[in-house]
Amino acid sequence: MINVLQLGAIDYQTGLRLQERLVQLRKDGRIGDVLLLLEHTPVITLGRNARASNVLGSPESLAERGVEVFECDRGGDVTFHGPGQLVGYPIFDLRGFPSTEARRKTLGAVDYVRRLEEVLIRTCADFDIPAQRIPTLTGVWTTNSHVGTAASGCAVEQNSTVGSTEAKIAAIGVHISRGVTSHGFALNVNTDLDYFNLIVPCGIVSKPVTSMKKELEREISTQDVAHSISRNFGVVFQSQMLWLDTLDALLGHSIGVPMHPPTGLRRLHKEEDTFWA
Image 1: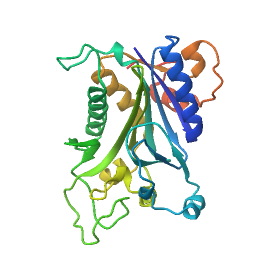
Image 2: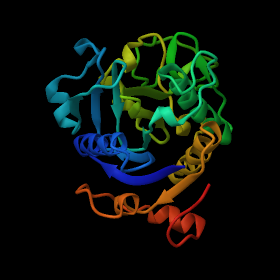
Image 3: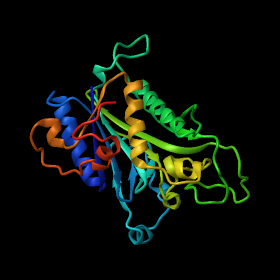
C-alpha cells in the first residue's frame, strides 16, 4: 500500500526537512511507503551533477522574482520548481517492490526511474497529451509541442518553427539511501514557463520546456492531475493507494511538520476522510 499526502504549497526547505524525517522513519520501519504531492514556492535547485553556470539569472534578478536557490543530494543538474507545477516525492523502500529485471529480485534504481517516467507518461495520456521517453535522457517529453520563440528555458534558435519537436514536460531527479527513495519528479501543469529562462533546465540547451497548459492551450485542474498521478502510481507500482488528510494520520501522532489538508480533493470525490484508488 502507498499512502498519499497532498501538502499544498510549501517552501523548498520545509519540503527537504519533511523528506529527511520521513526517509528516516521509513528506514526504521515506523511508516509505510508514502507519496507526497505538493507545489513549491519559486526555487531553483542544483543536483549533485549541477553546474553553477546553468543558473543564468543573476542573484539580483532571482531576488526580484522571489526565487530561492538550493543545493540538494538528488541526481541531475539544475531545475526549477514553482506554482502551477505538481511535485511528487515518493518515500519508498524499493526492497518491497519486485523487479522486472531478470538479474534482480527487488526494484533497482534504473527500473525505479523508468517506472516514474511511465506514471507521468500515463498521466499525460489521461489528458490527451502524447508523451514519451528519449533514449539517454531522463524525464518525460512531448512531441506535440507548440514550440517557437516563446520562453522555454533553453537556448532555442529564434527562427524555430512551430510544430512537432521534443519538449520536456516533466523532470525527474531521485536520491536512494539504503533502498529508500527521496526527491522525485516535477510535472509542469500550469507552470509559468518564463521562470525557465533563469536556468538551462537539466543542462540541456537543445530542447525546450513545456507544460500541460501550453500543450492543451487551457488551464488544467491540479487536483485532477494529482488524482491521475495517484491512480497511475497504483497501476505501475501494483499497489493500493490510500489518501490521508494529515501526517498525524500516517503516524498516529505529530512529527512536527505542518501541512495543508487536501480539502479540495475531499470535495472532488465527496469523501469524508480518505479516498481509495
